[in-house]
Length: 77
Image 1: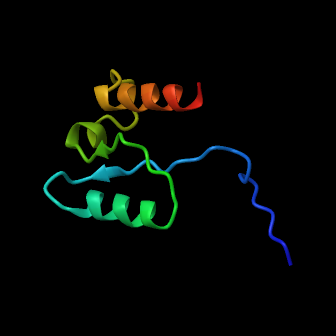
Image 2 (image 1 turned 30 degrees about the vertical axis):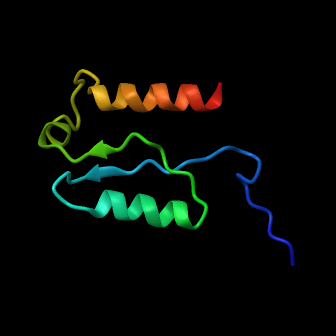
Image 3 (image 1 turned 90 degrees about the vertical axis):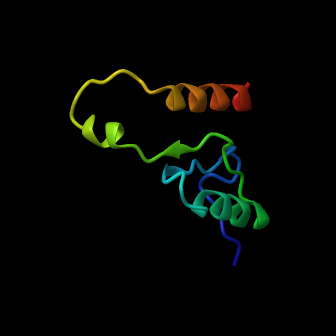
């Protein structure tokens, strides 16, 4: 039986987020995903107290999200 994946023809990548810079989880996760053929964005979103506190407010956009947006724009153009 042939499986049809909804995103088979759509470029996709995993964005690693809520990462603690003091832990090696990000590099391990990225390496593991790439080893099985999954594309992983270069930009990672760190875990920050300021992001958690911003929930439900209208904060300014942290630089990391601009970096991620630029990476996505570059990848699809």
